[in-house]
Amino acid sequence: MITKPKTKKTAAEFIAAAPDATAPAAAERKNVRGQKAQISFTIAPALLDRLDALAERRGMSRVAMLALAISNEIERSN
Image 1: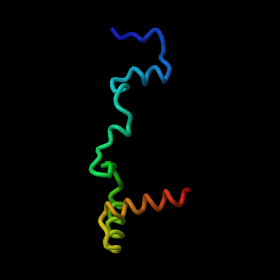
Image 2 (image 1 turned 90 degrees about the horizontal axis):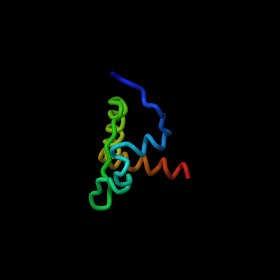
Image 3 (image 1 turned 180 degrees about the vertical axis):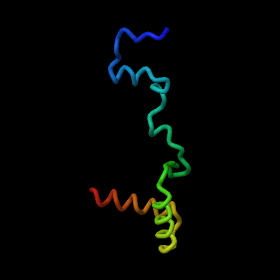
Image 4 (image 1 turned 135 degrees about the vertical axis):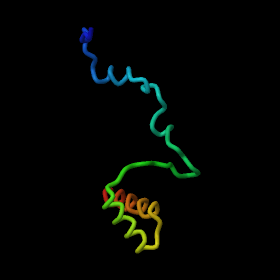
């Protein structure tokens, strides 16, 4: 038989009860290689094609093009 819990948890209590709640902070979990942190994300195939084409036109790698674009956007927003 399935029953509802008698008391509801607050969002903070729910998060604190998660199995990974005591995991290291995000900064400590980074996969660091030398002076750079490795990340992973998904991107739309059409956007990836455009990124690769731009990187090729500029004679850059995909990673270098992404790093430059991110850096430029951060500088522009300051």
